[in-house]
Image (cartoon, rainbow, N blue to C red):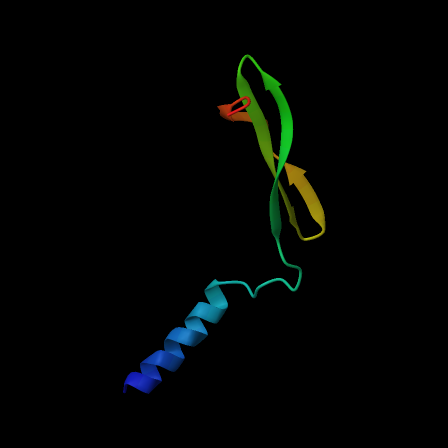
Amino acid sequence: MTAVLGRLGDRILDKLVPKASAKAAAEWYVHCYCRERSDFRKICTTAGGQTRCGSCYAFRICGG
């Protein structure tokens, strides 16, 4: 009975969750600037052949 429920659950999951893409996603940080004692950076991602970057945000004190 457990095996039957497991197979049924796998089938339902296959229908609800799309298959993983063959292209891997990548994330990295890009330095923006240092201003008013704050160091700013943004995160960029590549997924599905497209690269996107977010907005710059403060993440530490400059020189620290």
